Image (cartoon, rainbow, N blue to C red; front, side, top):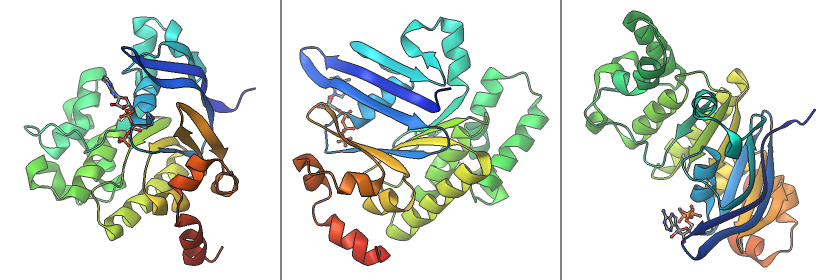
Length: 255
Ligand SMILES: Nc1ncnc2c1ncn2[C@@H]1O[C@H](COP(=O)(O)OP(=O)(O)OP(=O)(O)O)[C@@H](O)[C@H]1O
């Protein structure tokens, strides 16, 4: 049996005449935290959007949880969407809704659960992401950057997904906040048995939480594997991306 939760084969992405991906191949294994890395404009967010069916590639195949995304009916696509959660850059919370309403929105929309049960599930998710119960009544404008990320994570977890997609989860957080958020991501993966795909620039996150990663460049994946594998890769884009980081990472972590 194929242990890949996501596989991307010969993916081509175009915006008009502009080619963004030209033969991207990668695979994400069950239970791992997989990093999507690459320079600005290398197509990381676009690839993530294709994996969650917000964008359609020009050609190639993306399989998620054993489904070929290009052949799904509307109903099948809706069912598959419920099996993953997404943390968008900046959180993407609804400013007119409370924390409780933001987290419960999927449960309200896609299930027939009674309001009291939704409220209980939301409280559990609030606790799960390390927020105080009293946060439920607050509005996004009343939250710190770190709290917004946690609420967005709680919303992504509201439907008990198997898969989690995170777009720059630690961006905008101070180093302590970023470290705490990384720790939370690791704990949730372990407790909930999640598979996680994250777009990130954060070298500390890459070291701390990522099991395997892909570096995008020249419209392809120029390196894929564990951090050790990728750091050993001689491709100039890998060198550029980790410029100065090899020594820093090793000296910081005693490797
Ligand atoms: N909807 C769109 N229409 C046209 N071009 C787009 C669209 N979305 C992205 N692009 C272009 O595709 C390329 C890849 O963008 P993308 O946001 O995926 O890169 P990225 O690697 O996530 O970059 P960053 O690290 O800066 O967020 C960029 O050149 C961008 O301008």
